[in-house]
Length: 271
Image (cartoon, rainbow, N blue to C red; front, side):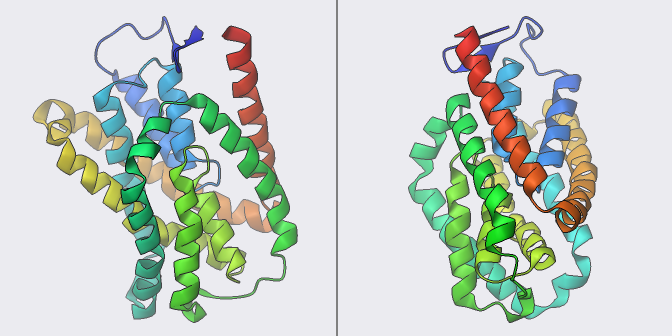
């Protein structure tokens, strides 16, 4: 296995079509990382590059479409909260900045999606921020019900930084929510809920642009991927809240720094 031209080439992946095992592995990684502050996009880029699939159109579509499973996991996890009208106001207010910036920066972002270097650097920078967050925001006590529209917009602006691969939508949303005064549990909940329109818009856009991805030939593998992502994402959300309460964000920060450094070393060694 070597690194060349922005992707890893693997002798393990000689087939033209993505296998069920590869699809299962991608779905597992999507479900685990979507709501953890470790960058799901970054992990998917690194994994698809390692598999030698980074530039395949269907694999790129698959990675976005199976996020629908993660959206369903949020609905199940936060079902009791979905009946509060104020929630929809602040979630929409937080989503709009990300949507606008994402639309305007679409071309630039897409150019970075196949770059493990960008992912590795952002993983390290984000890891350092996570190590400092528990100290910066330890006095935050706010709740979603008291969050103003202005502060929700600010959270959305922070989340838009996650358009850069490797930053992590979850990490950016958690940072923004705590910066705006939400306590740990509420910040995590807001991050989960904000994922619904953010991921939903990305998945819907991908379906619109690539209808062939959901053809009869691909439907079964997509359904499998969404189902796996749903179950694993539901478990990952509960894991995040429990670990954050007990140990803070330090484990995630250390993991990000170690992974980013490892990728850079690997690329330097095999380049």
